[in-house]
Image (cartoon, rainbow, N blue to C red; front, side, top):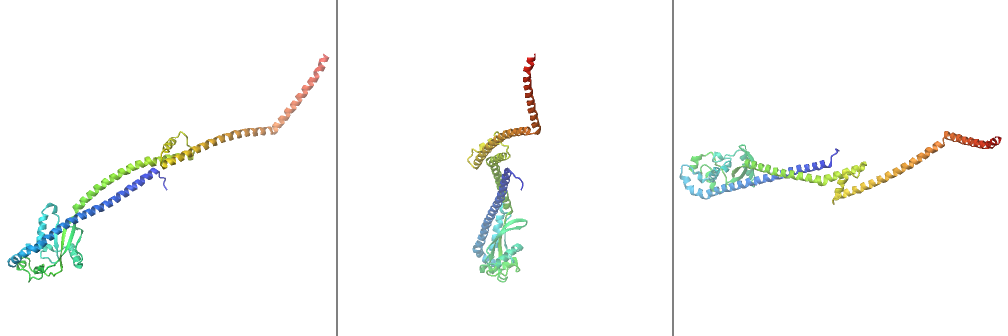
Length: 363
């Protein structure tokens, strides 16, 4: 395992926390913003759909009964009597405003009276779902339309009244004005309770999503800045409060282990300052202080003992050398010769002493 210092470890840990926090924040905020955007678009589509259905209901209940007699005698069909026409016209008036210019509305059908309402492949799928499952009352989501991402909200249009069949059951029952205007090939064959169209509203979502992404980038920029400042400050604080004391204590312990510690070493003063703290580092520093003191005392005692042993060894060595000299054959011979010389000297002195009186008398 590579030798990684505590400072590097702290930096790596804080960096990992930073990366995980940024990724988690991005995921959370992106989902929140996506949900907010969807809710915003859905609310707008719901309001517009409610408005269009109100126009349809008003036309069906009030305008159509007023124009029934005229439909029978007029040569041209009066489209204002049809709820779908009224809803479409009201929506087109709304689209004249810039903020609604990219919205679209369609009552897509398999066999519409107006060719503009013919269902495309996407709307055909919606219609098939509504027809296959009567419990499905609404479909919504996001799709691409004309190269632009849009939100769609679609609801089934069901033949719910016999009055609808007057114009759409068979050409024979339809008013002459309807036949004169639209012919007999489209918009017939409807049955009571049948899903004949998918009332679909398309709301542009690309711009809203772009705004949401810009907002997400802004929020993430702020979060990244905040996290970066927090990480930098935390790193600096940890280095001062944790990393630096730990490194200083480790250096002192290393010097203790190597026997290089001296009382005037800078590490000693640093650890003395740490020992004044009341936390775990202070407790550890005080233990290191006691250990250093004990080690120094033991080293001093050991030096004194070594010095004493050296003196004793030197004395014993000298005595041993003297014994080696005095016990040698050369020294013994020399000592014997010295003894003999002493004996001879004593004998000579004795003879000389004896000879002196005789010499004096002769004279």
